[in-house]
Image (cartoon, rainbow, N blue to C red; front, top):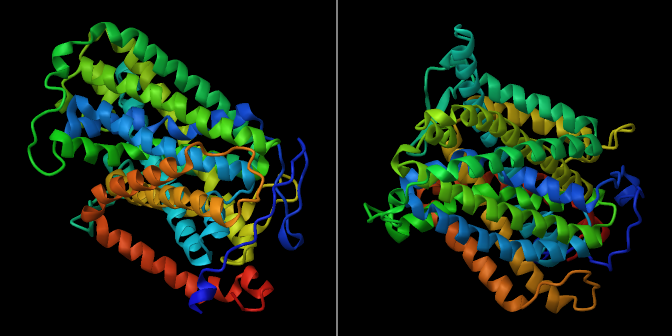
Amino acid sequence: MSRGLFITKPVGPAAHVDAGEIHGSLQGEGSLKRALTAKHLVMLGIGGVIGAGIFVLTGQAAAIHAGPAVVLSFIFAGIACAFAGLCYAEFAAMLPVSGSAYSYSYATLGELVAWFIGWNLVLEYLFAASTVAVGWSGYFNELLQLISTWIGTDVTLPKVLASAPYTFVEGHIQATGTIINLPAVCIVAALSGLCYVGITQSAFINSIIVAIKLVVILLFLAFAIRYINPGNWTPFIPPNEGPGQFGWSGVYRAASVVFFSYIGFDAVSTAAGEAKNPQRDMPIGILGSLFICTILYVLVSLTLTGIADFRTLNTPEPVATALSNYASLDWLRTIVVLGALAGLSSVVLVMLMGQPRIFFTMSQDGLIPKVFSKVHPKFQTPYVGTIIVGIFACAIAGLFPIDVLGQLVSMGTLLAFATVCIGVLVLRYTRPDLHRPFKVPFVWGVCVLGAAACLFLFWQAFAEHWRLMVGWTIIGFAIYLVYGYRNSKLRKAAGGKA
């Protein structure tokens, strides 16, 4: 059995995909429509990345962990993502399928590792959609407060309908006395409906949203930069006040927090099965979106900590909080709130697009029930998986807070990224014959440093949330042993022999 656990999926040279083709899948099951261009993929990556990082986590990471040096945290997390992004680009061009790190692990490190990564990707996508939806709810309430001020009538939602009824205290769930986070549930439900209709429509809407939030971010940079007080950057790295609280340990701890800001870029790889020319366009989509987003994060974090004392930024809407210090920028504060709503919406949309496509691939491999690989006859989307993911995401968003969920998302993602880095190196030696339209440069250095950086950031948060992470892992392996191992199509095709 132990050898069978690490059976690998055969990898063949990736055939060139012609634009607009609809390719058959395993066992005669449904197919996904190839409709996405390089532009769509770059916008998809930006849509997944630019959101909670700029509009929520930047201020909180600065206030609690790093101070103005949160800029260094973004750079460090960005470097780790750049290494992983290069590895993702090689895999995505070579294996243009919809399973992201799960599919790559299956081809290199074996079925058990692939399942482990696929299970962690549930944290990255499903939980991330819920987590960002909670952040969206905070900005939606801020918008309602602004509207109330304008019209002279209170139209805000009561706290019992706009905050999580449960929270985590020292690893245990406790009730807060509220009922549900209704705005978070509504945004997840609406965007799940959009994902159900089709990938092309979702990508088009995402492109519009991305354009809106990029304009808002550029407006913030253009008008807020004149209010920067260099004194707010002194000391740039505040003196250490305890483990993970300022000093260099705080910078590293903040890097593990803001890593959540980058997780959307690999959502591009989940759309490889729907790209018109994946061999050329996947590297462009992944690396292009990551490069643009890193620059924006650095500029925004510098500006944000420059216009406000970093200790005042631990709020659900830190950018709006910083702007509230300047009466002449009230108009910009309103625009930022609207831009945050658009930005967070696009992140939720990208996450809700990614998770059903990972389930789609896992289902085709037989590791989860085949209902997840059903494709809508008209829209050509994995509609059953989209519905199921939407229901669970609504429940998580409506019931739980953003802080611990965000940490779990980062932890699952870091493990996935580290595995991809290792997988590229393994496949270079086990299958050197494969055609690689894109190759990682300096492969030993990039892969080893990428895996090491991701595991280092993973450990920064692990001690605090190890019970939840271990519990999640145990549940995942139990599902695999009960269902996945018995129903694996690869194992059945091999006659049960690894």
